[in-house]
Amino acid sequence: MNKLKDPIISVSGVRGQVGISLDARTITRFAMAFGTFADGKTVVIGRDSRTSSPMIRHAVLAGLFATGCHVIDVGLCPTPTVLMITKHLNAAGSITITASHNPVEWNGIEFASKAGKLLTQTERDKLMGIYDTENFTLAAWDKQGTLEEYKEPTAHHLTQIFNSQWLDADLVRNANLKVALDCGNGAGCVISPSLLRELGCEVVEINCVLDGNFNRPAEPTPDALSQLCETVLETDADIGFAHDGDADRVVVVTDSGVALSGEWTLAFVVDFILNKIKGDIVATVITSRMIDDIAAKHGVSLHRTKVGVGWVVEKMHEVNAVIGGEGTGGVIYPSLNYTTDGIASIAAIVQYLAESKSSVTELVDAMPRYEMCRKKVEIPSQEVATKLVELVLKEYEAECTTDIESIQHLDLTDGIKCVWDDHWINIRKSGTEPVIRVFSEAPSETQAEELCNQEVDRLQTLMKQINL
Image (cartoon, rainbow, N blue to C red):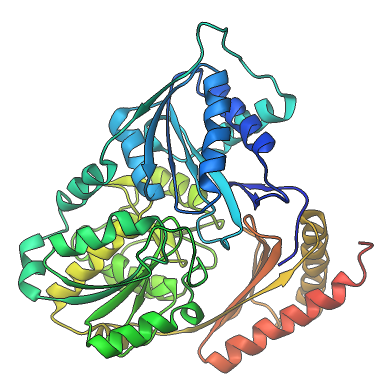
């Protein structure tokens, strides 16, 4: 992966490679900006298991103390737990120390505002304005910030999940499920094994050690889950689950040892929830067409947004959606909190499995199926990425005017999405990595891969035209 000299700042927060594009000075400056944004009030902080997280924690504390904040530290726990405690305490905001699914050498901070809500665009602009101008409200010597530790934050999270109207814990316990669980040595280790055991599941743990060393990539893509697939088969497990680094996502391995993409997590949960509660769905422009088919099956509306949890959340508030998420394995449960929650998804999917009395393989076979391909092109800077996307758009616009049959719909909600009757392709710059992402979906794996490869070739050709 390219080494960037500057951190990536996006709707997801701030991320960078530790010691290269992310250091204590940058973090402290952001923490002072956030402390100013929070008016020096109570801020909750938490961190994932990365070995660089303690360093970043100290930098965050310095910035928050300097602006007079009272800090409540929930320690090492998943991102959705941090936000849920922020909501529980009605704090002014939170900072979570994590790089989520990014590689182990990365880290970052994610922000939430009052009561654990992700920042709106207006709030993000206000925070960045404070950061850019360094217009910090610094506390006097006798009004410096204070620190408090919050014990057992995961207990509150588990209580909220068990109180959910869609969960029947006794039904799951009676199903006697065997579950293989791969937490990737990330923050999910402190909660997901406990959740499954409280649901009466026999749990086979792999990569559930909080040592900060990821034995597999933090992003739980199918290619990264060979050990979990083998474990499911060797132990005759009913299902396998894998988290990313901060457990806001989870993906599934079938009883046949087949690793599914995060698209299936959202599909399973949406179908399950809509059987309980009717209402609108929100997903991103690159989420699988499976969600369109599930929405049609239940007679509800599907709304699509830009990629990023913050955009999905804003639309969910707007349309009062009952469920939403991304095809990354991140699902948002409004009854719990407006953020992606991989722990809640484990509970929802085992409930779905217990109710259906079907195997995961049978559930997959009963779903409408499409093949998706994901590729990425590394780029030297976000500026180059912007120029590349602009050049691609010009070519597509030209194709639309010269050949009406070539593209039926051009969607510019996020990057460029070209839509045909039975397939689509999306090109967009990442907000979390120095790459341009290319997604395609089609009836066959071969067609989806051909579409992706064509766009990767196009991007690499056009990059040569840019003065780097």
